[in-house]
Image (tube, rainbow, N blue to C red; front, side, top):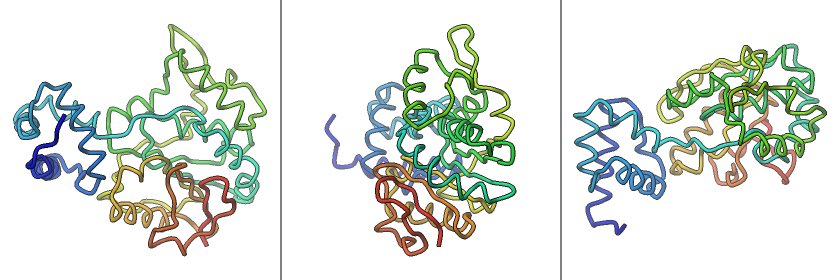
Length: 273
């Protein structure tokens, strides 16, 4: 679909309307990403223009929850990028073991795959019972799915292979039960996790933690919002705490780069100085 000369103006008006009506701030998200997502939303919602979509958002209570599913990122797997978790096990967990208790923040947790991957890894490494995970997202529907911890069985082969490649000492099957075409993760994992609404665009620091992961979220932000989000993570981390980013994300050009060192160039792990 061709982008008309007024399309960006319409998009900015829609994002302003969303912010003022619903208090969700997408105004500093990457415009290229927003264009793609709104094009998908218009097609699914039957709106020829963004202005028509804005009218629906403001006057039809059912439209914004549906639009939110397009504007937020909900793509992940258990143990996505297994080498990331392999480095967690070999280089980061040994230092985390020195703490009597641990707090971990998973920012942009979506439907929960990242936080459950960490919880399983922490159980396998013997530190789950002393850890509290804070899993946050701006999408309430995604948070409900994450808290349920139920995934389709057809996803399990991918999850299982990722888990194996992460250096796991156990079988993934030890951490879930299968029933009625779904895999349900152990309740002992879920009881260590606090799910909560939190926006990297508008909210502030809420806890001091030893580890933060925020993977494949910053790529959807513009530079100013990336710096804001990274500042929240820096301020949340204790000295020598760890930050994990996605494979296409870096601190290199951030204003917060000097607050971290990178233990290994192979993976996107950083340590607070």
